[in-house]
Amino acid sequence: MSEQAGAIAMEREQAKDSEPASPAAERILILEPGRAERNYWSDLWHYRELFAILAWRDISVRYKQTVIGVAWAVIRPFLTMVVFTILFGKVAKLPSDGAAPYPVMVFAGMLPWFLFSSILSDASGSLIGNANLITKVYFPRLIIPTASAMVALTDFLINLVMLVAIMAWCGFAPSWRVVLLPAFVLLAVLASLGPALWITALNVKYRDFRYIIPFIVQFGLYVSPVGFSSAVVPEDWRFWYSLNPVVGVIDGFRWCILGGDSPLYLPGFATSLCVVAGFLWFGVRYFRATERTFADMV
Image (cartoon, rainbow, N blue to C red):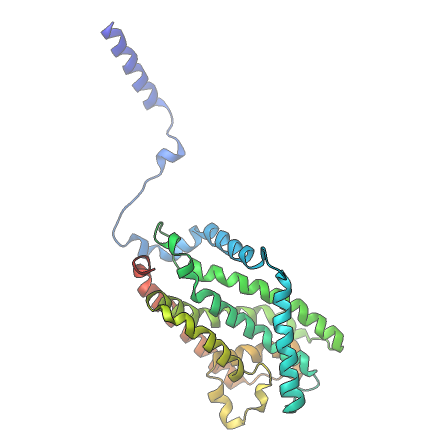
């Protein structure tokens, strides 16, 4: 009986060896020092589904179970436009860009500013808000702040529809340059991601940075040409004023939307591009340098 049982067991082993290996059995887990660092940027593409899940979750949280929902993305910029139009256009009597109505000029500047400030605010606390995810599994941490930027882009699309309605109400038609608007939207995102990644990494180590962000956003709203045209800045100061990266982004938006009524100041725009590139390089570099410590500090 024992010999028969042994023969049966041997036949089963041979049958297992002859079966084709399943896809799961062919997967190989490699543990190698520095492998995650070398494959970091390719891992961003491999984890694209995680990026989509986090972005969709943030968008759902923003608009789900709210009293006014999407209307909040309309009320805030609309009221800000009304205040700036009265304050700068009626009281201070600052000129508009060419023949463009003052409300259209203001709202064309508010589009990139709200995109910039929203990405900066949302990304600054994104790592703290996803502490449980960071401490449990490996993935490129850069996915978290960039996924939070999708909420700001959703608000931007809503505001863009509102701009079209305001332009129709004022009887103002955009120029052909509006087809270049996606390039300046990308520029606005890159301009915000640089400082956002830097502040996000700092916020993990120094939690009081979350109190500084609202001050930066409020201060930047008035020093950037949102409620007025950058053409009112004296010529001797325009170059230095363009060191603010948002200036070039706002001027580019107005150049696309208002056309010839808002000429682009090329030296200042080139300066803003250099500052945007510098901030983006520094932000990514600092984020990557401190990324390995996030799981220990969140």
